[in-house]
Length: 531
Image (cartoon, rainbow, N blue to C red):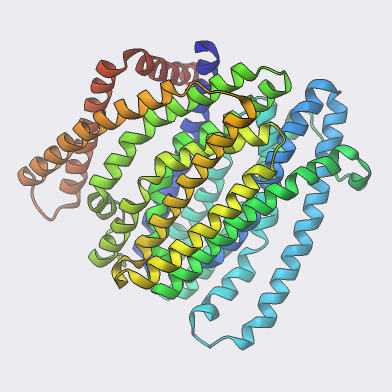
């Protein structure tokens, strides 16, 4: 079990360390965005419009088709020849490209037709032009997601983890290098950023395509995909997953629309909070999810169900160990974190308050969302995409009801926070259901390890949070007030103390588990330095 756990942890650490580069760049991107656009209506319209390409990404990219394709590709590579596996990939990619191109073209035409009917200068009048610009990004990012899955199966976790950095580099380059030269009109600058999204999508796809070409994998178009039973099987399994992911992502788009209806600043505030949340999510949970799908697929294909269940419980323990302190820190220091990162330029103190409320309400979702990234790949590895679909559909209904209830009943300045709370609650319900169904499918899991880790982590995190709060208060009192550097030093000192205290307490409470996790991460970093 230790060897299996070490392999998953090391691979997750590799993906996490590389994804961290993208997440940090993403945070820099959001800091520049906040400075230039604040929580303006144009920025909120951009946020809502960008949800649509992300909807397609979840429908046909990393969420659904990739979940169906990766086990099939892994099976073909293991039990057939490389040529057969390459043929499967080419047929799937060609069909996906044709389907997405047709859908995007239809979407652009529809937005163009609807535009004259909307209120001039209104919220939809700003959203639709941005949607027309960014829709083609869906084609490029969905194809890129399939290529990422192929590279992961081939044992290359670094290249796919690096690809998202291209989006952030192009985005930052536009904000810092192009927008300052444009007229001081927020709308013109937001349109420039929208075009940069499309350029970044092209670069991401080209980067991954070239990585596969260097490995000897040709992806030239193959037009006879529907004649291949393997391809039809991938699409049959992808359809339920796409429907399930589609229900979830449509609900995400509805969340954005409801937020825009609740207040012009609400989508922007939620997005800024979400970006902070997804820094630890990307470094840890997304990295684990990326590694777990091919690992689960291989273990299930080989019939090693005990190994499969052991990998699930060890991943849950590791994620709990890492995400509980992050959750406590974000809840306790939300206003200070938001102020240090965003409060400058167009982003004022009122925006800080609104974003901090959303962040504090989102923060408990760190643990919940991480657990979901373990159970979803578990079912997908067993080629069962229907179960997550049914669970998602039921949970989405709950989420939508909670969203509407909170928006209608909570005060204006808290309505957007209600959307965050409903997301966390519904995700928790989904995790409980999936865990129960996993037990029914695979038999008894050894939950003792994750449960003990949860209680130990909670205890250590509470003590850590108290000391971190005291440290921040003391440093803030000693340092000059009103200085950005003072705020950074106070926050950095609190976080540093929190990390040391948490690791020390966990070493006392759970030495063996702490040593396994920390050593796995350290070995991965040492290997990277030697490389």
